[in-house]
Image 1 (cartoon, rainbow, N blue to C red):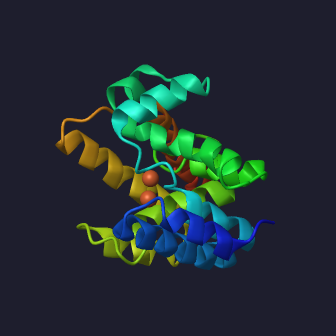
Image 2: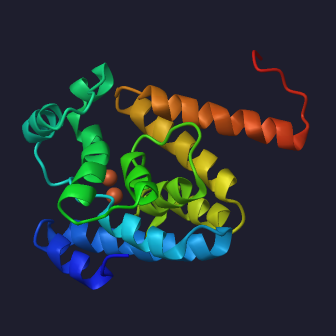
Length: 200
Ligand SMILES: [Fe+2]
Ligand SMILES: [Fe+2]
C-alpha cells in the first residue's frame, strides 16, 4: 500500500485549503465507518483522501481530459461536467498518485452519483463525503445519527437528500443515482418483509 502521508502532501498542492481539509475529513470519517461496518480501513483512508483529487479541474478540462483518456461520457455528464471529477479522479488516483488497487479506484469513481451494486467500501466513501465534520447543510445531523446505526439506512437517506436537492435546483438526475437508490429501497422492502409491490 502506498504511503498515506506522501499522498496527502502531494494532494495538498493540488487542492484549495478548504477542499484539502474536506478530503482529510472524508478520510477520517471513512476510517471510522469502515471500522464500524467492516470495510477495509486502509483502503477507506486512501479512497477518502483522494476522492476529490480531480475536483479542482474546470469543466472544460474535465471534458477534454475524459475524452483524451478514452472515458465514456454520457449525456448527463456532458450537461453536468462536474460529475466527471469522480470517474476522472479514479483514473488520476491510479496515474498520478500510484494507486493500483481497483477497489479504491472504484470507490472514488462512484462517490458522486452512487450507483447499484456498490461494495461496502463504495458506500463508506459515498457516505463519508456527505457527513464529514465540515459539512453543514440542513439534515446532515440526521444523516450522522443514522450512520451510527445502519450503513444502508444512512445511504438511502443520503440518496433521498441528494435527489431532493437536485430536484429543488432544477438539476439533472444521473441514472446511477436513481438505480442506486431504487436498489436500496427494494432491498429494504425485502428485509422488512413489507410485501410492498414494486409498482406501487
Ligand atoms: Fe466529489
Ligand atoms: Fe467530496
